[in-house]
Image 1: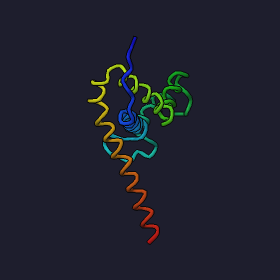
Image 2: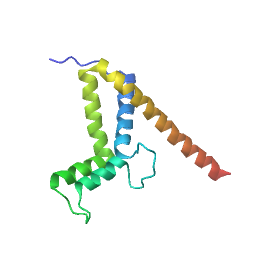
Image 3: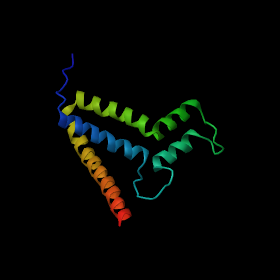
Length: 125
């Protein structure tokens, strides 16, 4: 039987922030920083993978996989399941991977807050 490690608030926050950042990386981000408009290079590739140029499905499975990975809620759920399972079964090894992603997730959230408050202050002036 597997003994589950204790889920403290700090570990919950670490796993949550890492899941957030990995999901955002898959669904929205571009490695080269280019403005891709409709999503990340990965999501653009998935659209080409899943659909023909006229918009019809290449296959049911490809269409569902493409839709799943272009949906932040869907991708976020499955990333969270994978990250949590990794932490439960290999907690020491998972920390080496999760800490940088969690720090990047925190930085991303702080950047979004900074942008929000900067725009709010600019509108008030």
